[in-house]
Amino acid sequence: MPKSSSEFYFPQLSADFVKKQEDCISQKRFPCDFPEPNDSLNDFVNTWYSKHLKSLKEPIIYNSTQNSTETVRFTHLGTWSNPRFYRIEKSPSGLRGYYGKTNGLGGYDAGKRIEYKEKILPDENWNQILNQIKIANFWNIQTQDPNMILDGEEWILEILIDGRYHVVSRNSPGNYGGEEYAKLCNLVMTLVKK
Image 1 (cartoon, helix red, strand yellow):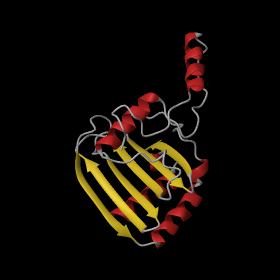
Image 2 (tube, rainbow, N blue to C red; image 1 turned 90 degrees about the vertical axis):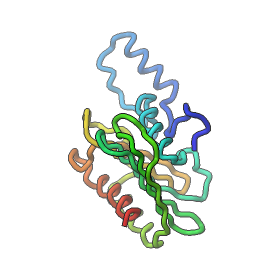
Image 3 (cartoon, rainbow, N blue to C red; image 1 turned 180 degrees about the horizontal axis):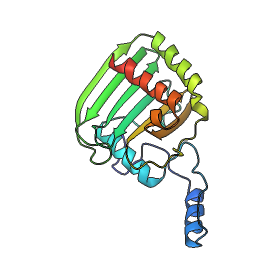
Image 4 (spheres, rainbow, N blue to C red; image 1 turned 90 degrees about the horizontal axis):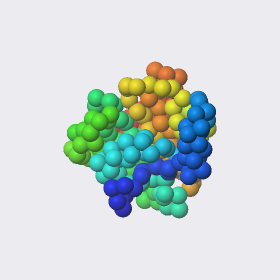
């Protein structure tokens, strides 16, 4: 859990990158279309996503790289649906699945957690996840969504394996060229929910 209400769940953009953006805007060198770096989010998106994960009472993953637990978390923020997460953790004591939902709206209010479940998963589920990570080429997908979509569903997938962290965010990926990524997110959801 975050130590304060202002703590982000995802790494922030570096000060150098933010200055580069500000310089471009102040000097009116438009478009300022250089890509944001991987595995970090701008403050607007980070605040949005973080408030939902905080209301879901979820842990921060990216700063746990020294931990022996490996984690895969799919967070679903639909504009008009309840925010929810599906998390799978592999630790020396086994494989566990976690699910939570709030009464908020993914595009708006965070709400309060109204549902939480956890269960033991069969160890072979981890190999299914690793296989789909490989098929989706997850480690090489850009963090930020190249599509500009103003409505829909944010699909945020964080993976921490062997001390390596990566986050990818896509809006309605099954409809906009992210089919293998969507299959990976759906697999995490299915394994936790079944």
